[in-house]
Image (tube, rainbow, N blue to C red; front, side, top):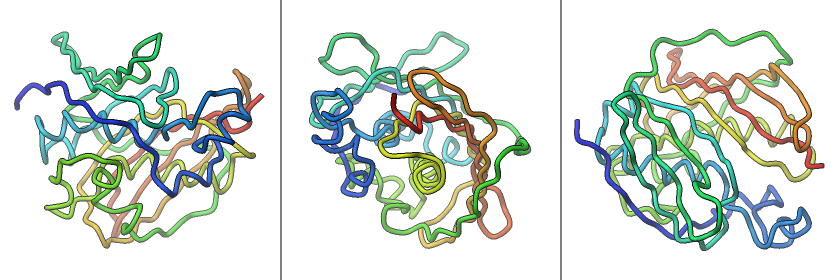
Length: 239
């Protein structure tokens, strides 16, 4: 496999993210920010670009990693995805022209290992979601990425997995504006656009830290096969 290389894009919000007010200028300003925050899942989509280019289908099938959103990426920011490799792990940093960098960091792995069972907690309603439109193979293109690998092969874009976890947070856990802070994402197979995903999720922990936070376990299944699992954290009620 090749080593990932730096890639740059102007960050932008997708239309569907306006349902979380923090991704609009008025909603962000009401929460004390200067302008709309780019959805964490879109920043994550950008961070996967160097990995898809370098590692391709193998990473989409077996890989994953942990992404942490340390500071906001704002709508319109010039965002550089900068890889580093220390021999143990490959890290992609999201760098903008704002003070205090990186804005987000993804520590990627080539093999995420076997499926880890979901933990006990507050079980949320099971969702059945067709993997088309905002959940399909063109997430990257809609966010301004010119890499068409997923679209050409009809592979569901890897950003869809945390997007589906966000959907569970939005529908069942968050109260008003909320912020995605962290995800551990594990790939267990490749999904194709047009499939129907069964999304199971449970809130395994709630705690206070700069607002009310929730940690979810999320499992995504297609035709009886688990294709992705996540540990997903968000601030679900801002202070």
